[in-house]
Length: 398
Image (cartoon, rainbow, N blue to C red; front, side, top):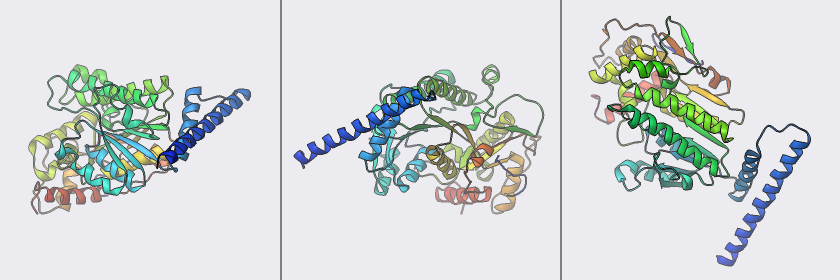
C-alpha cells in the first residue's frame, strides 16, 4: 500500500384494462399484507408497525406491476458522489430519478443528460429547503439515496448557511419518503466528519460507527470550516430520530475524503483537497493539514467504492445502522512521502513542520467489510487515476 498506509476494515381500452389490472394487483398485495399482519399478531411476534407492513406489501405490488425493475431516486444528481451513483445504478439496470435545483442549467446537468442513453433516467426539480418538492421524485421508488447537502466553507454564518439547511433538507426528503408507499430503504450519505472529530488525547485510536463528532467542542472552539462537520453530525442525528419515529428503514454511509475521476464538468473540491500535495496549492494543502489536526488522520476512498457501498447496503437486506466507508488511513506527511516517491515528475513538499507523521486514529470500515463488501481501489489506484484526471483538466502538467 505504500509507506504509512493502513487498510481500514476496519392503446386506450387496453390502457383501461391494464390500469384495472394494476389495481387488482395492488389490492391483492394489500390483502396479503393485512393477512400477514394479523397472522403476526396471532403468534405475538410483531416487530413491524402496520405502516411498514403495508408499505412492504404495496412495494411488492409495485415490483410486480413494473416487471421487477428496481427504481431508485438519487437526491442531488449534480454532485460528485451522486453523479457516479446515478451512472452505477443505470448500469445495474435500475430506473433512476434524480433531483437538481435547476434542470434548465445545462452546464450543471449536461453530464446527467448524457447518461440517459444508459437507461431510464428522469430529472426532477427539487430543493432541499422546500418541503414537498421531493414528493414526485421519490414516488414509486424502492430506494432513495439522500446524497445532497448544503456546503459553503467560506460562510461567515454556518448556522444559517449550512447547519439549519442541512437538517431541514434531510427532514424534507424523509417526509417525502414517509408519504410514499413503495420505499424499502433510505440510504443517507453522512461523512467521516460526523464521527472523527473529538478532542481526545492519545494515539492509536480506532473510530467506528458508535462514535460521534463532538459538536459542543466544535461550536465552542469554532476551528476553520467547523460548520460542515456540525451540519453533517446534526443532520444525521435528525435523520435517525425521524426514521425511528416514522418507521423508515434508514442506513447511513459514512465516507471519508474522496478522490478519483468525476463525471461533473467542474473538479470537485474533495479531489482538489486530496491532490493538493501534488498541485502545490498552499491554501488547499493547509486545509488538508487542518483536517489532520482536527480529526487526527487523513482517510481516503475512491468515489466509485463509496457509490458501490451505497448500492451494496441498499440491496443487502441484513444491513442496518451506520457504516463507515474508508479504504485507507494515513497522515499528511506520509501521504506527501508516498506521492513524492510515486510521482517523481512533481515537486511534492515533504517538509511539513511539526505535523505528526503517524495518524492519531484509524477510521474503521470493519463493519462494512464484515457485511461482505470489498474495496476495489487501493491508494495507488486512487491517485494514479486522479493524476490522469487532473492532467486532463489542466490542473497538473503532463
